[in-house]
Image: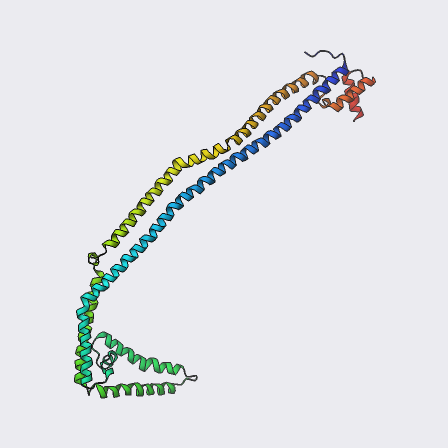
Length: 363
């Protein structure tokens, strides 16, 4: 229960001291709150820096670990590629040699046939061009390919050349086209007839014999092509002596398989064990600094709790001791000094009159 005030001066001076103490404690609280916020921010920054360091270190070492194995796998892949290339070359060479060996009799027969044909034509004084492929295509075609070549020659001489020449004329007229066609028929047709009359009829027996020889050469060529296709399609590779290359390829593939397994195991070990060790090492290196920051925060938090209790008690004291006699707006050092001055001047006899007079003076 509040007691009657007998000494207003002592009361007001006590109130002023209590309010000053409260203000000082509030300033201390604000400064401590700011310090605590800074300490917490610094702790958070340091914890984040440590966490980032751990994350980056783990990521970098994991990449280095994988990169080491990847380089080995890449080298193995390159070795495997070269080994397969060597095997393919060896097989290709074997196929060529097999083709050469199995078609040798036919190729030798064709060589003898060509020599025989050359001898016959020379003995009968037949021009050399009469034993050429184009001569037989133009004057003695027998197969579809030769008839196609004969037709292509006709189209070239009696369509492409005359019409192409006609298109090159600046001022084209139908008469020009007719003259060009006439000239082509005269030149190409005349040349064809002249050559035919001087060779085909004159050396008909020799040309017929050459036709038979060419047919035999063509037949042998078809046999050679058939043998070549069969050899290339043959899936049996045992005859090419590729075991050395197969063993090398198998060895490289086994090495790569083992390397891939080791990589998987190493990565699994890193993820389950090594990265935790790395994190613990980095954390241990920064533990002293973090612990110091944590202790600082805990100390400041303890100070803040203590000061909060003291502030609460001080506020309750000011409210209970002086709040009943003084209005809230007068609980300030300057206004308490003003009230004390009014009372000491004798212009007011109690606190209520002093507060009213202050209000009138500052209205």
